[in-house]
Image 1 (cartoon, rainbow, N blue to C red):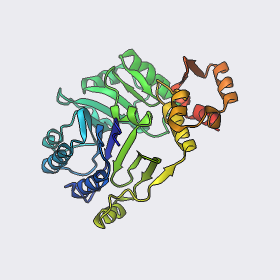
Image 2: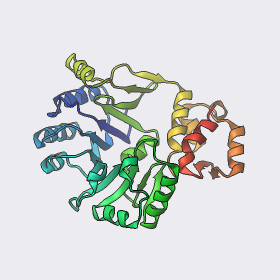
Image 3: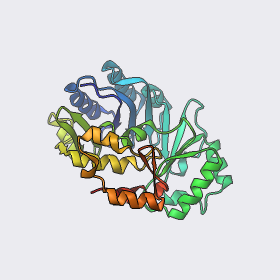
Image 4: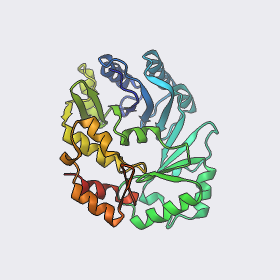
Length: 310
């Protein structure tokens, strides 16, 4: 079964900087999936990965023809080796924290992820100019502790500099939205491998999801001949519909209930509270544009999903 587009999320174990375990797990996971191709690769790389390891991973991906032409390749985290970025074919850098405020190579797009402690009080135009000078084209907020009032200030500041809020806590210059995040929120397949990685993948009988174990247990599982994903859980159609609503409302584009009905085989009344929908529309908190539901305030997306779901 061919399932484009899909995302590939890889997280190396700290004790696996050469990526041997990760490459083994990748080969095993995809050996039984015909036609798997990925529109994005997100490497969550806290380990010190050198160029030879990155080159070996890229060679494996190319040999399997697993990356689609023009795939977004993101390296998340610091890298001590520019050669490793080149070897992997990185198109997008993602850096956490204020360390990201530095000028990158012009060929790179720079996504920056900030937590509450990384933000000035409040962020202003001078701070924004420094971030832009560093090459920032995308900004995400991490964690749930950022005060809502700060998000409002940050949203106004980013919009003033040409950024759009395309997800609850993510902004980007037009054309620089994170493909991996968009596909994840749109409910596309995610092959996630490595310690603590969360993924979902469809088969003939429906969708399965998993969350891999911690680093030591994951390495042991791969050493015993597995791919480290552990137990695969079956999503019921109801759970799949709930997942699509929760993820989809976080996007500025919102959700289309008719598409969720077609995907899950469930009529909307089985998972959508029509009375709650009517109240939210009347209050202006939720907009209905030609059958597409959008959060009026992206910061309310999770609360709206909770109110809508049966």
